[in-house]
Length: 496
Image 1 (cartoon, rainbow, N blue to C red):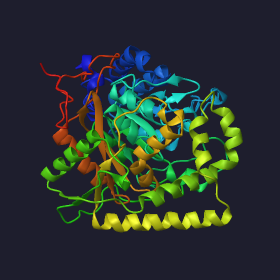
Image 2 (image 1 turned 90 degrees about the vertical axis):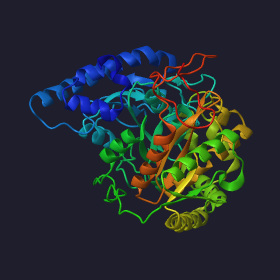
Image 3 (image 1 turned 90 degrees about the horizontal axis):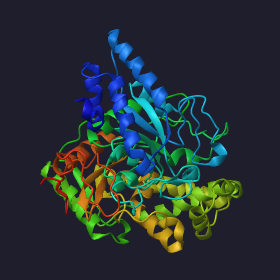
Image 4 (image 1 turned 30 degrees about the horizontal axis):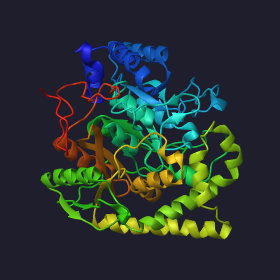
């Protein structure tokens, strides 16, 4: 078992540690060796915490030897996005300005994963300040490479976590999402991710100082885990959920809601807004719909989701109005070319005045009401994460056409973040050598329904990762030949 520890799921790793089949120290060394082998080729892990991780693993082994009960993630390594504090380690946001800004305490989600027994093994790359675009490129650490194809972006802004999880450097990653930032890397890297309901996971958004940011910054951003399997995603979800006095938005909702009378209705919207969808993405949604139909769901094709274009405009105006006063200072921190993505957006969307902001807040609530009614009739929604296959790095910052293309492709992610409902991204197969996937969206605080539906999709279509990074021009095969044989369109079969 020792030779393949990093290939195991988080659930399998933790169970092996609890049963004393392997030590936490052995498990950690397996992952550190994998990081040493793979990270120089993909640049996903930015600050390796090897000594701290070894010490934490040794403490886990001492606790087990003393007869203590270990947590559900005992000994499991996880990566942490550069924007999320880990005690004693700089929280750089990928910017040179913050390279010495050492965190004095763990962020709430890091502390919760630790409490479940997991161990942070390293920070992970992201776009500078989370603002430099969708592609994972930071001023401080450079570009992260998609392990499936170096000419495609791994997505972002939690792209470092997506790559680390996909390549076996860690079975779990801790990112955050305000419009697709865990779900897009999940699709582009062939892993799963959860964007929870607003208020499901507690957090403290005062990460750059003692002052509270505005309502959009606090409400739209949610922490979210990435994993290779839906089962591991569920373990992370259960560890992260709950309330905390430091977050007044956190809600004490049950982890698992009341059973709904079946079969559950799933609304399928393949082309949100009617703005176009790539044939391979359409095929992904169809494959996932078939899987849910086979699992007993009442799958219904729908024309569209509620008020999509109106929601996207309100989202843009609200966030850019809140952000505009800080822009002259922030753009100086983004490094050379790092300001292009936001500058292109601000050229297109002017901030509103006080009266306009009041109207926007009302529109926001009205759109949430429309979505609540939609999901009351259809408890689940199935649709694309990104309406294209993985695109080239930096497309969104190249010019206005590139930015508009990326913003359009991620539109279902943006609107579901704006509405605050949960969504699970799950792979569906491989098309033209690149992973594909979908997202399952649910009612507020019904992550359990989303996870169950995603599990049904995974059960039929398979798990794609871990993989070895692909040199340019070579075909990517899963590192484990028994994995990655999902039933999606144009699926690569690694068997002879």
